Length: 320
Ligand code: SF4
Ligand code: MG
Image (cartoon, rainbow, N blue to C red; front, side):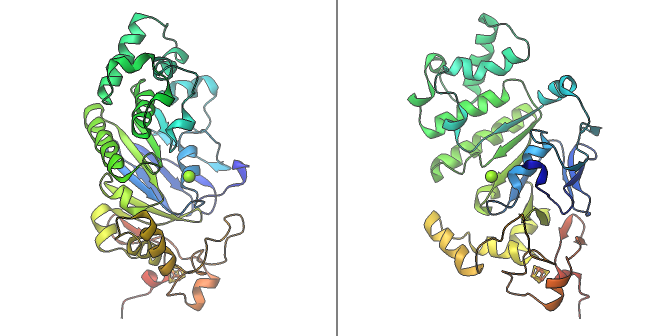
């Protein structure tokens, strides 16, 4: 099924220096070493698929993925195993992602074992150190996932993802299921770990408020297309794409309920099917600024300012 998903128009990806991801229709997503790129859009827009493509957990229909400037698209299973040590993913639902019958020690230590370590004192020591790094006591080792709160379970998931000392982490809605106060704790932890371990994050969320604190740059996706990319300050203070503006307008309230209501007030209708997207600009069925050209022609991604890219006919038009 994943093979039929197309992202960025062609389903084609290319990577350049650092950890970067580029769709062939001139959408160029690049994740620089040590930064956090926030990736935002409504569910179904393809952001999780993009994260999985980057890790090669699913295969692109066509195109190229590179890591550290190295093309990893054609790597075989054994070669990919070595690369995979460097790239890990943290999921939204820490409970669903953790095997309920495994102890915390086994959950966190399993990647070490898979990559050739022997169970024993040395592995236990590494797991204990990682537990400390994520703020859990050593006595958690012999416990099971159900004995922990949602936030603690996410710490266990983070420890498992970090035990191999990876360089790139895809955080797929990693804090979205948590209470706001717990969210803040986990985001702070992720930032501390980033500094300490030199990590690069692709931080996926459906909500701009969640990525605000942690991101250096933000990419906004709509129906498989990256519609706007900019540094954080620009995205929040001077967004150009109507969809980005609508997402920001939906954020002010602290209450999730108000947030989703704001969203519905400002963006008309539901998100169309990604399998049969609207012609022209894919956002045209919901855009308050829609023009005739929008229904016919997809806007190209332009760069109105260095590092700020946007795909909208409004931005393409010469300023009067
Ligand atoms: Fe709206 Fe047209 Fe811009 Fe698409 S191209 S976001 S429909 S104004
Ligand atoms: Mg998702």
